[in-house]
Length: 418
Image (cartoon, rainbow, N blue to C red; front, side, top):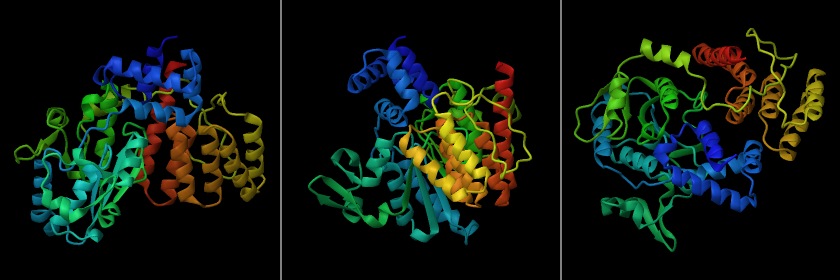
């Protein structure tokens, strides 16, 4: 085994194209990570990657380069301000504007959006901004909201005076702006990315598509059609506008805004057909690791039998499952939470925790457990099925149907490959 095998494994889980990142950059990142881990054999390092979420995240952080600045390209923000002032209040007088920045890198873009909306006359109560990136290190920088001179290239200094103050480490963003952005670490080509969120009216998604593999682009486009409302606004990179035009997005006539609108609620038929033929992405290195359902949580959707995760001590989880089936949900929850503290992150354990929460009618906690399970094993049908049941109990039949459809596609792919 060579470091190239490791690079391919991590790239399959992120959807990033090796050629776009640069093979030499990947090789250096893998070599540095192995040296820091004190490992000389790539096989040993791959085994650690597969069992350690923190090791995996560290390698992702090393591969993703954060290169951005406030009000980058400027015209997208000029157009955003014009759009909000001219179109939003009249057509949506009582609605809260929902905006997504993904990938958000180190926070300059979502904070630029927040400042633009304030400058456009909206109050903090009139909009909501989510910011997502696959790099945990980038997200931590965004939450810290302290920036250096390089982050203000070509920016109006008057805005710096209004929203920043000088500190020994650089420029600290005003807390009233920091509070307007909700940061989270996630993978945009994850099968259930933002599945629990309502769609957005405006999505900033710049310079992502150019880094994705073709299968990841297909899945990304399918997901984008869920994230953004019909006729919602998408702001992308200048080199990506053609891709979205081919996907039936309509360009906006504002020079250098690189904006387009989603044409309507129906997906393109050929796109749906292509999605059905592509395995769910990111790919798992082995069949999904899921558990038998709790007898307390019944499901109308059949769950396929799968082999247990070899990395998870089965006896401990079986004992916890038995406790839950006996009705001792409080004890089972405490045992499962302790198990997760004492062992490497496990999709099976998080899914079990979700089932325990669901049996206790703690739907928010159950959803969080299933989403964590799916982060670790995107092909875990059990987690998808019970996540769909959570949405059904909340009355969100449409979202439940989407999640069930994803589960069926995975089950079909596993059956065909068997």
